[in-house]
Length: 125
Image (cartoon, rainbow, N blue to C red; front, side):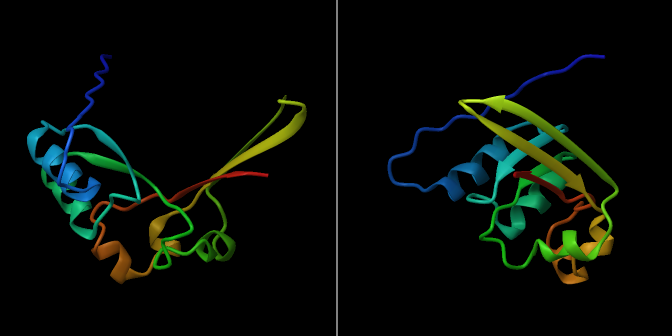
């Protein structure tokens, strides 16, 4: 098995992050997993990545009202992983859970994010 890390970088002066990411997606030979933050994720970003035979790992934040955390409350998690450690003078518990998109995300939101299959929630307790 081989793995490759491809990193895109563009320094821009008059552009914003959204247009920079769009350009990077067009320039790259995707065919891999793309990690992207919601800050730059637009509705057509998923389509572009999937069209180039890629998959995406999207970090959702509280500012995504159309993909509510209530899906995680309403649907049983497929898998839950919890890790507890002591660091910086305190205990921290990290919890990661996944659900099926079809169980938690409306059809409208699934349609505008092609390939959305498994929402993952990671939290620090």
